[in-house]
Every structure is written in structure tokens, then in C-alpha cells.
Image (tube, rainbow, N blue to C red):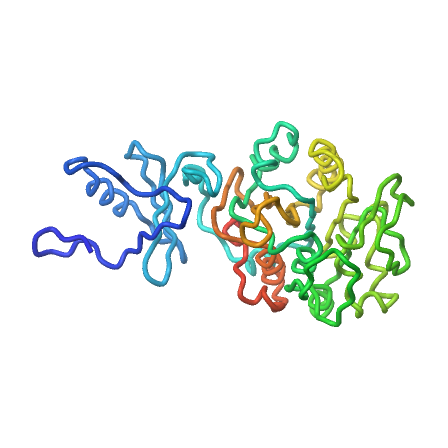
Length: 364
């Protein structure tokens, strides 16, 4: 509570600060800290469930306030910083109020999710070895507080596809009787594909495979989640939706999960190699007419740390409805990405996605 004599000037505003974030105004008496706060609050415009404060009159970066059940959370920092750093991203480049995923879903026909491998956010964002990836970051949106949910790789792919790691703690060969995103999509009249580079066609259950129509490369079953579900693996019609990269068609399905081989996903090969592959894959997509009604997500299965269970990973949100250069510090993980797809098309939810947030703050 802030009082001026007998008058209550401010009450019920929660200025709690998450660990690793530097916030607020520090200074001695007479340094005009209160005056600055008053100026910020006077500039607040409530938009939907969020409030955005413009502080152009101040000599500090802009501020951002998120509404919560107990008030707001004020976060300030210097432009371009990443989550977990001393100064998180400010709102100098924040776009207008977000629309819901469901609202955007009315105009989105196609969603493509591309999963790369085993790099923490800090090794990708700003890396000179990933010029194309970082160009996408500047042009579209970046979730800087997005994490994998587990180690090693396989449980993260299962989480993205089924809302659960299914209890898996290794990269073994598993089979499950559990609902998946494919089930949700089909139940709502939508189509899906898993495009896995170098995968053998015909419902193959091989743990690894080499070369084939996609050329030189290695497919790893642990990175391809659909084949681990019996309702797909044992149904020839459904597992025909697991296809190789040569058969990738941008408009072949409403939802497509793209799994590069273990070189192109940066698992066995360099960041630069994966970045070149990403450019060759995405450039035609972004230049296509279909892109006007599309969303593309690029994420990594896991990072090198244990933050969030699977490490903080770079996740880019791409689409004509994404504000250029926007960076979100909202906490997200793979369940959030699944929930975003579910909310776009009103699919319901699966397991842990039911309690996850979505990435709607990117949508304008």
C-alpha cells in the first residue's frame, strides 16, 4: 500500500519479481521513485486481460504489466535481453493487444511444427553460426522463457504429440495405448502428417534407418512420436500419414510435424549445417501463397540444462499475424505449444496440456 498522508494512493498491486529478473526503481529518498511509478500508472491502458504501460516520458526502457488474480507484475529491462539474464526484454517493441488462439484459428488453415535438437537458447539466439534462424527471430516472434519438459529426447516428442511423456525416461522403443493430437485432429475433421526425414515408409518400426528417397541421412525413431502409439502404428491407413521429407507438401494436411534427420536437426552435425537446412526448408514456405493462412513453430526438443525439466530452448513463432521482433518472457513449454494448436481449432486438450497456457500473446 502507498499512502500520502491520510489518503490511499495505491493498494493491491502485486510487484512480485520472478527469480533471475531485475525490476523496479532503486535510489535514495528524493530520487523521484514514486513520481516515476505514478507516471507509469497514469499511462496504463487496460487491454483485454493485460495492461501495457508506455513510459516514453521516462529515461528508462518501457515497462510491461501482466494482470494476475492479485494485481499486476511490473517488469522492466534493457532492449533485447533474454530471459534469465540480468535485464529481461523490455516492451519497447511490444505489439498491440493479443488475440486469442481460437480467434486466430478461424483464419489459420495450416500449422507446421519443426523440431530441432539439443541446444540451449543461448547457443542459438545471437549465434553467428545460425544467421537464418536469427533472421527469423528478428522478423517474427521468439519465446525466451520456453523449456523442454524432460531429458533425454524422446519424452519431449511424446509430450508435444500426446500431452504426456507417457512415463518415458529414455530413448527406447515404446508402444502406447493413449490419445494423441492425431486423434483430436481427426475427430474435428482435420488432417495431419508427421514428416520425418529418411523414415522408411509402410509403418516401419525400425529404431534407426539410413538414406532412402530423402538421400543420405539417418532417421531416429526416438524423434518421431506418432509411431509409438498403437492406434497409429497398427493401422495402415493412419500410419500412412507418417511420411518422408521428399513427400512433404505444404498444404497436404492441416497440421504437420516436421522431424529432420539427426544431422539436419543439429543433433549430430553443426549448428551451421542445421541452419542451412532450415533455410532450404522454410524459404519456399514463407514465400508461398499458403503462408497467408499459416503458422509455423520452430523449437528444440531439449537444451543442455535442467531448467523446466528439459532446458530453456529457442522457440520461434512465425506467421503473418505475429508481430515483427516480438519477444515473450511468459513461461512456456512443449505442453504450451500443443495447447496452442488445440486452442486454435477447438480440439480440447490432452493430459498435461489441459493445465498449460498457450502462446496467444504472439498473435495480433
